[in-house]
Length: 197
Image 1 (tube, rainbow, N blue to C red):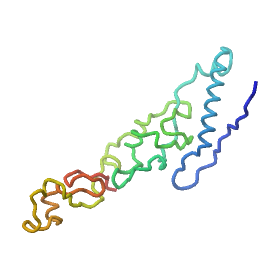
Image 2 (image 1 turned 90 degrees about the vertical axis):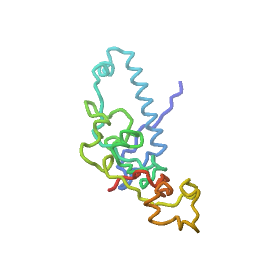
Image 3 (image 1 turned 30 degrees about the vertical axis):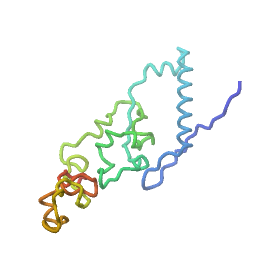
Image 4 (image 1 turned 180 degrees about the horizontal axis):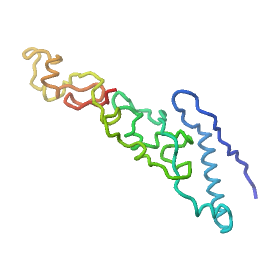
C-alpha cells in the first residue's frame, strides 16, 4: 500500500494590517486536505463503538463563531460602493455571508462554527438595528450627476431652437424623468442609491 505524506499544517500567522487578504490557493488546498483527513478519521473511528471519538460525537453539541464577520474585499470585485452602497453592512452580511471571513478562525462566513456551545446565528448577530443606522435606515442620496437622457420620450418633440436648451437646472427640476443619474443609471425620479454617511 502506497502512503502519501501531506503537510497539513496551516500558516496561522496574523494577517497584515489593512484590508483582509484572501487565503492563498495553497492555504485553501491544505484546508481542504485537512477537512478530508478529519472526515476520514471521523468515519474510521465511528466503526469502533468503544472509541473515545465515537463517544465524543454522541455528546457533541452546537457550534458557533465567537468572532466577527470581516469584509473580504477580494470577493467584491464589481461592487462600487458609490452606486451599490457600503459593503461593510449588516444587510450584506446576512445576504452574502460567503463574502466575509470570521475573525476567530479565518473561515468563510458561511462555514460551520469553530467553537463548541450556543451562539447567535448570523441573522441574530447582524440584525437590523432598531434606530437609524448607516446601513439600512440611513437617508439615501445619489452621489452622481443628473445627465440628459436625449432618447427619453420627454424630449421627443423638444426643439432646442424653439423651446430652449434641454440641459438646464430648471429642466432637471421640472422634467427629472428626462435625466439619468451617472452613479446608478436610474432616471431622475429614482430614490437615492447610496446611504448618506
